[in-house]
Amino acid sequence: MRLLLTGGAGFIGSHLSARLLRHGHEVVALDNFDPFYDPAIKDRNVAALAGQPGYRLVRGDIRDEALLAHLCGDPGFDGVVHLAALAGVRPSLAQPLRYADVNVRGTLALLEACRARGVKRFVFASSSSVYGAHSPVPFRESDPAVRPASPYAATKRAGELVCSNYSDLYGLDTCALRFFTVYGPRQRPEMAIHAFTRLIAAGRPVPFFGDGQSARDYTFIDDIIDGVEAAVERQPAGHTVYNLGGSRTTTLARLVELIAAALGREPILDRRPDQPGDVPITYADVARAGRDLGYGPKVPIEEGIARFVEWFRAQPA
Image (spheres, rainbow, N blue to C red):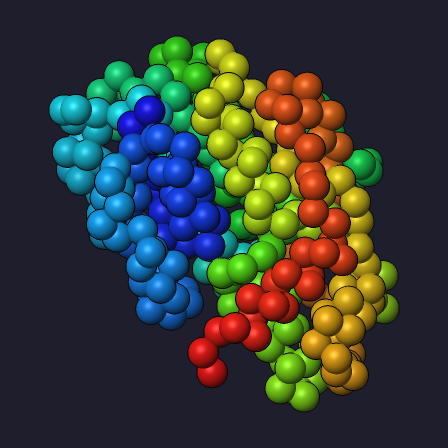
């Protein structure tokens, strides 16, 4: 298949590009190299992909309608994998209008380009944050998810809804994948596992929110890529939603313990109150993804943290 992959130079996008190319797909990766974090990191992410047959990197914005029309023109795409977004719960509290513009309007611009150019397959990267603080655990796709706890989460739920709308109105096959806290080599530097690893390795205090009992369903990058690739290749007709998670929870206290043990360092905790927009737990029921996509997480948190720390230590100072 020939695929347009937005956010293609990011953490997940660069891993997915490599997997899709390895399995014979053609990838046009679109990324605007937003300075939310150092764009040089994205340059390093895609350095090994440059020049590979079937790969093209385009620097541009998903809100640029003329660019999208050009990209989706002849020869067009068999499908779109839409990973690009402004990420992060806490930053969205400070910039809700910008998050809505990029995450909602950008998704609509892509769907419009697909409709106008006859692209019929659309895979959307959503988030476990859509469930909010009031959904029963484990989280199931049948939950109405009507009380997201942050502007970021609300934009992801809105993206799911417009995907459903375009499926109903225009016959696009749309698939929303709810990612549960993805980590692994190349993880964004501000995300908890990467930030904690950097701080503990340097002997600096780790921001430790609440009593340490908040829990997350952490998902290793290889497992997420398995799920996304399966969605691309086995996407059902109509509109579908799938959880992609590790289907296991780890408390904040246990996470810090695992990272410190892998580094061989004693963590210093900077205890802080719970943060607005955070939820007490995320936990994926992945039965639907298992049934339809053959998805099953393989990397437990203990192995995943060890592999991440190994990668971290190999990075230049």
